[in-house]
Length: 248
Image 1 (cartoon, rainbow, N blue to C red):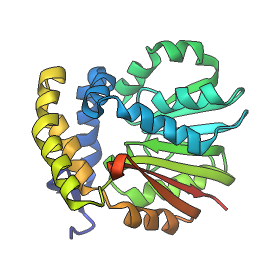
Image 2 (image 1 turned 180 degrees about the horizontal axis):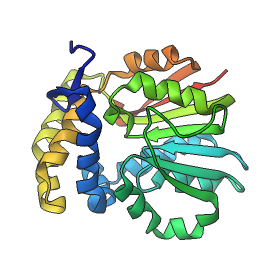
Image 3 (image 1 turned 135 degrees about the vertical axis):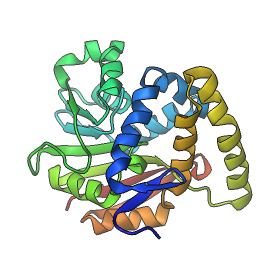
Image 4 (image 1 turned 90 degrees about the vertical axis):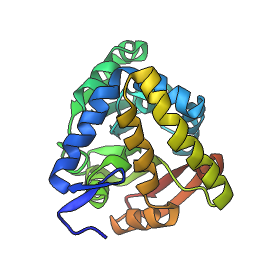
């Protein structure tokens, strides 16, 4: 256990005050290759996971989405594509990720429905009861204090609003988890070096996945933040999981 003044950055223990800057550095360095690397690392499966997220979310016309750690806009583009008249706010602490997102073709087509905001998941720059839906995909494990981010999600959602988190998780089968770890630790950092010229950032991303709480523990954290009807679904044997909760 670490005390209140330290946290983990991958497998390192670092001062809590330093983590956000370190994470910011990682995503600034990988921004230009982020989408390409996602496809390579997951063999394209991240697209299937995001589609599964939308299927469970069932976006409705006119809804207001806040997509936190929204990066290059993947989730927001999908949401707007399924919900006529909806709006999406993409929030990320790394401006270079948002810049990459704005340059995507989808961003131009959906410009009137999209906002891009630099901000912190633990201190959202929005009023209470503002959004119908809050999503965060592969971002919550990088937040310094996850309970703070979940409380902020609860605060900015309107009553009846929905939280949905897509995050890497733990495979319930020990042998399969070991095989996945072998791939993660031996292949992904090398891929990061070859494609993005940055082994260290991808080493951190792999380590951060292993430090993230297992499904039941994270579901408990969502409940503690005030959400009801909390459920999760494993994706691809539990390599990733979708977590859902409602502000009741």
